[in-house]
Amino acid sequence: QVQLAESGGGSVQPGGSLTLACTASGVTSSRVCMGWFRQAPGKEREAVATIYISSGITYYRDGVKGRFTISQDNAKNTLYLQMNSLKPKDTGIYYCAAEKNSGSCYTGSTDFIYWGRGTQVTVSS
Image (cartoon, rainbow, N blue to C red; front, side, top):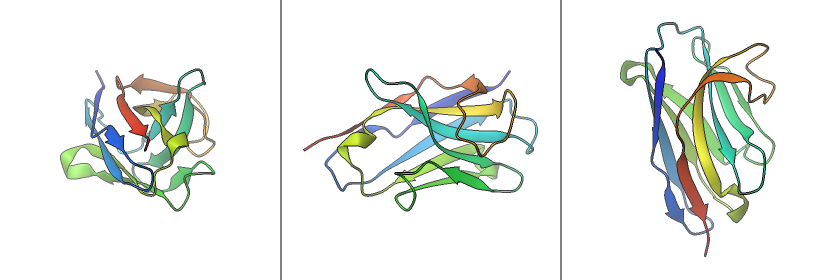
């Protein structure tokens, strides 16, 4: 059973930084796609960044490229999202997910099997 737990959310001013962490258990293969997603109030969930664990190849949505970095620490079974130069439009609940239901890891799809419960990120002055 795969379990994912996010941490690191909070409130920051525009221009600030946060680092989110997702601790994973039950992921038995490195040939797995994992990612960070967010959902703003009244909007659909969207992919922020994804990574194929065995290769380290990443995908970022337009709008976060150059500001966010997805990374992994395999020894700690942890996925990270470093977020810099945060903007009010980055506000939302951020979720970690693992294992694509189907298709490529790099399309920005939200079609993942396992999800964490999310952590709130608020960017406001």
